[in-house]
Image (cartoon, rainbow, N blue to C red; front, side, top):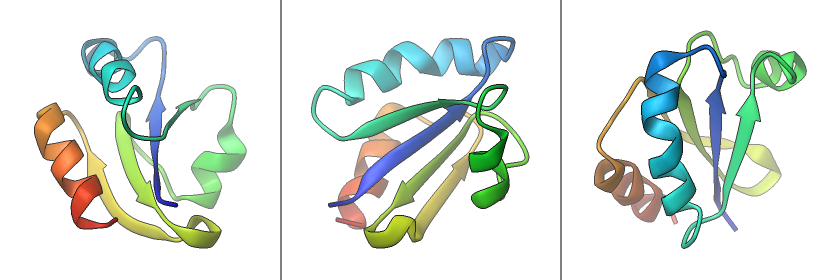
Length: 84
């Protein structure tokens, strides 16, 4: 099953704006929130260089799509559904 990896940081202004919306999305879609300050290993694995970054990942954590920056939540949901 596909899931969303949401890379953010507590000091990131745009992440603070997007975070609550991602929490709402997590009620219907699998979303894993990742603090880049605590999980630099995952940042390196997925080549995350800016926050917020949203990855749609599939089997074996293969990256299916990537969003960098803030996007409307319905756009994020549509991207997830297109890749499911």
